[in-house]
Image 1 (cartoon, helix red, strand yellow):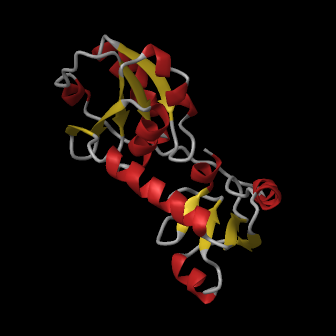
Image 2: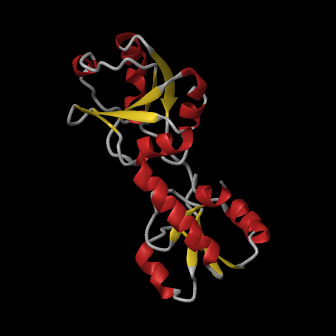
Length: 199
């Protein structure tokens, strides 16, 4: 099946960026909607380094500049992406929301770390594990699921589906814990993302 990609760019008030005053070397990261603004932001915030586009499941562009910066500035909405940057880099993350023009420091990273640790401990204590594999392009990690099945010394079952929904997992009450290999936004009680298992 052919796929057509249509670029959808967001708008950003650069005058609001001029109001940001941070005495740290900042790594600039954003989602694809605002990536075209990074060069302009880099000119405005003199002590900055362009990281580039990130996804919640892939913050490689933040990691590649980790040793060049003190902290990060994420341009975008929500906490999903900046939290992953903070968790993966161990550095402070500031956020600028282009919709509300709000600038703030990401504060709840320790809370996410505690949740991850708790989920990992519950995973370790589980006997029957269900590995969730999406059939969607870009999210299908069947080879990773098969590798996990060989390496994890537990009773493992692989579940292939197009649309993973938490409520459907209730149909399998004998599964003690789930490992999600698809989009890390798929979270819930009894689910751990594969990246947290492999750390």
